[in-house]
Length: 472
Image 1 (cartoon, rainbow, N blue to C red):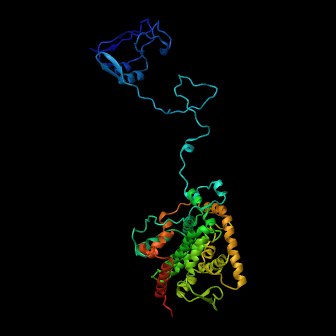
Image 2: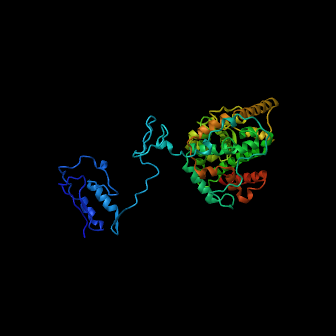
């Protein structure tokens, strides 16, 4: 039997007559598509939602779409109609209404009101990425803390950090690693390399990235203060190691070029441009500048014998007896770099070593620490006449005192220079002290005494220099 719903237009009651003839609900869909019943003489004008219900009889809506939807959600079983369980509403409303303080929420609201934070947009609610450690702001209380009793000697250079460029065991000066490093430095312009070096130098000096535990152990808030104190012995040795290792690596970049003359001259020009990018007013990394200039002025790379006499270069360039052809080619092919080295970088480095160069925070992000470190470790005697040497000694000690006092300002300047900078991990590693130590002396030789290691490598550089340009 088929089940049909009959609607008599002439019926005076508010409901049409219904007849159930089967337990099969399939014809409900046809009912939803039938035409609407015309209103009868006694039809009620009340809305459907306001009509009274008798018992559990469902209200028949006249909207065809609604009946079709209901038909699809019904199940017939043994002459009874069972509705499918409604979908569980989401916990979070899809629409958020603004709060109205004077109007309380009511039960019949379609979407409940959710308290919202005033002025908060979806983009602001997203969690911002964490800033790099060199951009983290120092606590004002930590900056203004007084000296406390130190607990232990602190070093900021990681001893055995894992390397992505060197294997667990490596030999000195592996050719494949040297080629990789050459490619890395060629990919980055001098300004980018200078910022990489500034970042690593700030970490090695303890200017940036110092943890709260480290500050508590060393009793001060910065490595610039620590290196002037008696318990800064370990830090001073590490800074000396770093300065000399960087200088040796820079000299190797020139003396390791066994190709044509132009290749060595290009290496010299690259070091000069890097020194210009490190000088005050640029990156302001004076320890890095001192290391690069140490490489350019190393005896295996350059030995000066007065000024050039006669010709167009008279009085402008120094007479060089070591790698003479290379420096001469630099003057011809890269005259601007050669002039900047002679007239700007060399006088600047001489003034810095004598304690008379620029050292104000702003144009300098990391001050020149090598003179005071050598002085406190007894590695340098102030040469010259007594009066001049005494004045130089006083300038060095005064500079160390100023450096420690202005450490918070240097920290802010360095952080400002590095703001927004995203370093290349491989290039950053290539500039660390631990990597350079293993590169130059191998994983086994890196643990040898410092004086022995440096003496051997100086001899290696001497052999390379003589092989490139034998003495006449």
